[in-house]
Length: 359
Image 1 (cartoon, rainbow, N blue to C red):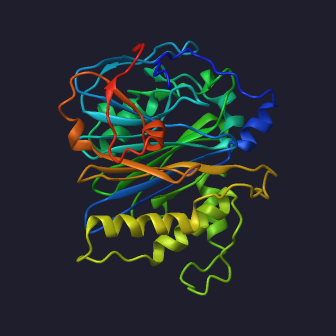
Image 2 (image 1 turned 30 degrees about the horizontal axis):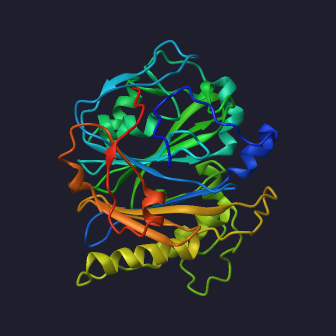
Image 3 (image 1 turned 90 degrees about the vertical axis):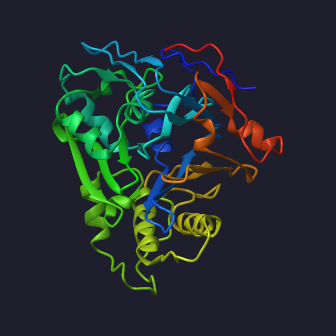
């Protein structure tokens, strides 16, 4: 059974490969966020060269939290303002919150972006309280109610990302999407010269789809060469590369329509089929950009309004769900091993107190 350690300095042993090899193997994961008759909804996958786990962690209002960022002048300390539920990966990443949503319908996603790694050396500490990769997603959803509020705070130098501290003793490129129940989206990326760039849009813009490298401006150039309105899809590529997954995601989401008279379950099914057609990565395929293989191991779909959450383990195709609203009575941090409970045949997630909680 997974030990739910919330230890910010814990290190896991990763295969002894070069930094470049790690970055290439990691070049995966996708997210789509769309408007539906039942409200804004998000589908997210976690793809990697090794099998991944998933723990669902609930942090109610009033929990004191902190982030460990030894390379920075100020480390963030905060108290949860909004009830938040995060998806945490321990098997490979030892406690990284990859995705989270709060009681106000604000969600945030952390995805790999290998191209940003080379710019970390030029990023300068702004003096703002800093957040490690482990904590930044949870901090956003535990502190802000809307995308605009989170971005305004970032622009006002109220928080920053601890790029130099990296993860597992290595520096990595990542990027962050912040998306709320109004459909407002912000994409935060580290660019050349250590410059933080924030792309703004909504669910009608190209920010409705998120993949990995390259940077957003390069994705846009690649997509501009293809006619997305051509339903014959003759120009739509089929590889698992991030460039192609992003393009396919934009193609499929530009043609999907959600009908008003359909139930949430039917709408959720359509969301998943739309995502899976363009962004789910099957096992054993090779990415032509880096020569690596990876697969979608875990996936979740959630509704920013009604609180529904459905998890799928693509190693076994087992599923389990819960509703955000059912966690609102919790007064302490609670955890559930999503993969383990799905394997036990449960349909609804059960929570218990997290073990060895720190910060």
